Length: 145
Image (cartoon, helix red, strand yellow):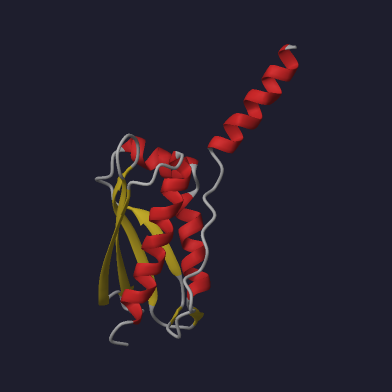
């Protein structure tokens, strides 16, 4: 009986900490970067970073952004999650994207913000705001060339 409970608990915990599945923005942008990086700002509290890590949001956003753009040399895309909130009430995320030249100069900066108050379980709300951020950043970076 204890073995069954331990296995059930392990399955439940792994389901609670599964990666959020994110899709590339559609349509794919014609812009291209030599690389894409997604991070959090240092000011983001540890429990919020832990939640993002537990649901593997940063690797999922990185992958979705990489697939949303062409591969090209020179400029890179740097994204920083500046705000994140999940729990009772709305789930919210804010991110800033910077297009950076090979010499480190910031060529373009775009902000994206997303909030949801849907009655989903927490990881689904995290997925909704993360996907919205990906879509908004791709759209914002494509605006004005």
